[in-house]
Length: 351
Image: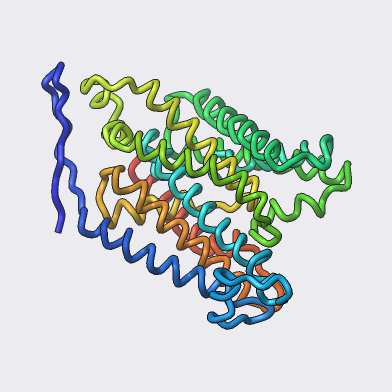
């Protein structure tokens, strides 16, 4: 079942075109997704190099015994890891949804548009020149790096004759990402910090600690709440800037606020797990297909589906070749690369 909605500006009398939405599908995704997420968390905490019974997991969470090795594994290793996966998946997915809504670019994604590479470049600088820097400062520098990457991509893409197009933006993103990644690798070789950066190159949640989650949670929670508050404006902006201006929307302020939210979400996620790409490309498209084009539904549903994708991808990464782990970024790329090629092919036909 689908419904339509429109908005009317009291001053101008203009109204947006009616937009198809599927609130029942969105409610099902939210409720079913949360239930599936609980199952995924239980499986992720239970499975690993040492399988732990679900009853033991329950006891470790609610009746923790510090003398039990299995309880320590659950509390200190697996639980923070899976919770990090939830936050990272929600962050990348919502960041991608906001970028696609603001730019009307179906291929917008923090990984494709240089944000992840920029954040990784700042991580390299921090490891090289400020070893032992507290994690809070790593997050802040990651925000700055993401902003640098995005600024370079949009600046280079705007230099082309005819302005920005989805394909030009992705090409500029690929060039800037390659440059920043090469610089990061050069710094790693010169300062011999390759092992420290290998984690960020591959993408993964192994080694995530509670202190990292404590520092990440306020940033991510605040940014997700701000994204929800901005969702109606993003819906209007996604119809086109002319429509948004005609309705009296201050598009410059909306884009500035949306960009700040994207930088916080992408920067926080990269600081914890590294350059995991394609979550912000896949999930918003899937969400729009399922629930329609109202960002009041797209943003929360994207957060739930993004969390599901990363949690189950991380679980799969541990089960592909036990007891060794496959980088979670590689697992997600198996889905993301074919979808990106499909989008690029479709955009080229539409040019």
